Amino acid sequence: MLRRLVRYLLGTLRVDVTGGDSERFLNRCLEEGILLWDLRRTPERLDATMMLADFFRLRPIARAARCRVRIREREGLPFLIRRLRRRPFLLAGAAGSLAVLIWAGSHIWVVDARINGPGYLDPRAVLAAAAEAGLRKGAWKARVDVNHVTQHLKSRVEELSWAVVRVDGTRAVIEVVEKGAVKPPDQALCVHLVARKAGVVEQVIPFQGEPLVKKGDLVQPGDMLVECALRYWAGGRPLVLPGMPLPPRADLARTVVAQATVRARVAYRQYYEYPAVEQVKEPTGRRHVQWVLNWNGRSII
Image 1 (cartoon, one colour):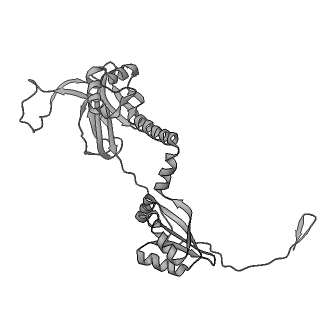
Image 2: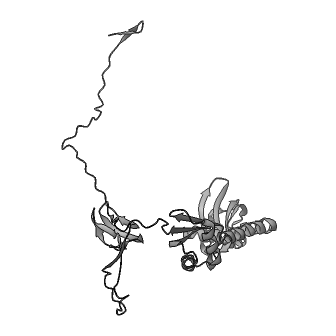
């Protein structure tokens, strides 16, 4: 592969050698270090392929062997460049088209806002806040900081509880979760969020309630994921050393309906039974011929 690439970059020629002593011509090429390949000999001529740089060294060899060398085919980058020089507008158009494609691919042309929640938030508000942070149609992708846009959305739009920005090619997608607009239920009503299947927790996004699991925890069906109570620390937030976890909040503030998005990796198992002995039909190759007499739509053996 590398050899073919080098030959294409340097250029190759397909030549016809006629007349004279072709054996002497080949021997002299070998002595001079001229590489010939893909040789084909006929009673009238000798066909060979050679490098472009070696062609200019053939004149004394052909004269000594009394042969005539004629170029039949040209292939390689030097000949392509020579043809393109004759068509400057074609070359300029190709270079301009490539530049336009590179320029268009380095910008964002589509910005979508996907809102999950009650539906009271206008998508235009999310797009306007993203535009303030630099994410808009026609923005250069290298100048768009996804983390900065996410933080700006959370601080600018108070109705958001979670936001993420993804850039895929020339398309940007803003996914946000709107805060629950449902009125708090009766204080006596308490609804927990429990697991339906066994799995390993991958992501926890709480909306209401106290989360009891975190990423990497193993849960079983029926395990409580989010508690329906909002808890706090009596006497305010305690002081702890950096790197140490906070103590659990034990005092009950009020009860709510637990709401959260919990994603987990779930495994499924399937069970099949196969017989110990299975009958398989295989053709034996034997033939059976039977003559049948058909008359009036009936078969008579």
